[in-house]
Image (cartoon, rainbow over all chains, first blue to last red; front, side, top):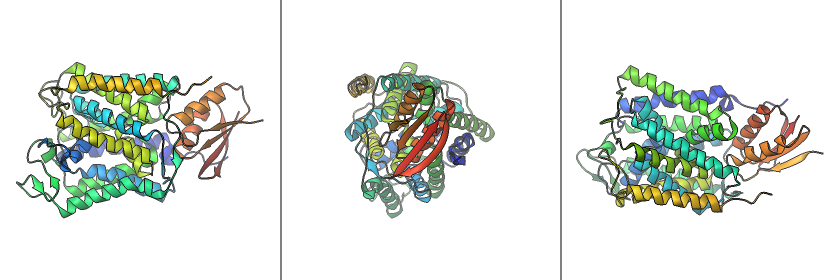
Amino acid sequence: MPKMLSFFASRKGIILAGVFIGIFAPLLQKMGNPANMGICVACFERDIAGALGLHRAAVVQYMRPEIIGFVLGSLLAAYLFGEFRARAGSATVVRFFLGVLAMIGALVFLGCPWRALLRLAGGDGNAIFGLLGLIVGIWIGTLFLKSGYNLGRSQATYSSVGWLLPLTMWGFLLLMLVFPQIPGQEKSGVLFYSQKGPGSMHAPLFFSLGVGLAIGFLAQKTRFCTMGAFRDLILFRQGHLFWGVVALLVTAFIINLLLGQFNPGFIKQPVAHNMSLWNFAGMALAGLAFALAGGCPGRQLFLAGEGDGDAAVFVIGMIVGAGLSHNFGLASSPDGVGPYGIPAVIIGFLVCLFIGFTMREKTN
Amino acid sequence: MSRLVDARGLSCPQPVMLTLKEIKSLPGGEVIVLVDTDTSKENVCRAAQSQGWQVKAIDPEGKGYRITLHK
């Protein structure tokens, strides 16, 4: 009988990934990252968009090394274990738009699924509405999947296709080293650096990068995915990935308690608003977009690291979506939703429904 | 006579959906699943085992794997 599943593919493996993230995300906060934002893939990609000047919201501009680490850690694991496979060509432009819409929804809630869990683990009750929205969005996605929705097959392709996003991340890291943050200055070379707000709060570069690399490595091997956790539970009654999410939530809660970072309540929670309906709806849009695209924003980074060019386009879609969100007043702030956030969520849903209804393979 | 599921090039959760659809339509026998990523290989094996099927063999095929399921 062949050896079927390695340790990383076992339940212990996925729980290890969740525990690791649950320990290090609160520690990143302790080391300087914003409150309840030890890791937030959406927020950090938004900060990267800001660092590059794709939007000019002065409070959210920083080249987050965690994101760089996620992709490069995954690349390393994929090469070490012989899993790097360059592939692309599965409805790529649809994945770009799903990335844009996922980011718009996430920035109405103010966080991705990872941050929704970390916000809850830090006592932010508003995250409950976000997580409920996420589950409803994913549930809608599973209805499309059951009715034949899929984005079609990808093709094996040149290694360089799979290398483009990892190389971009190397470039981002290089930019950080060539143009390091200068205290008191909002720009260093080509990079923007926030002087106040969440973008000004960050752990030391090499700590962030190290944690990002380790998580990227672990998550590539264990296939950690916050969207897949709920999707598989709804679609197959299968709880494998869900164990990782539970491990993350419980561990982060305990670490927050130990570090004195647990502050329960709904009002004046850090980098959050309490408009429950739009916390719910924003995350429902993001959840639906993640489900239609086949992975949470973290998973898309890990897939991009192992050579998936379509996942790389989803990531670029999210970064562009962040630029659009802040340039056009779609993103929320602690004061509430942005001036055009509500219509953006409604239009986003309509686009997702269009994609879901029209990209169904006729079976039988 | 074994059935064939070609899940190459498909991303999550399609390989598992196709495999489950096939094995749930059969009382038993042999099903061959072709996949091209390690993630799909693991997911298909896990899903089949949860339905009481055994993974008889995993052989490299092209740039992917040929999984033989049996019940």
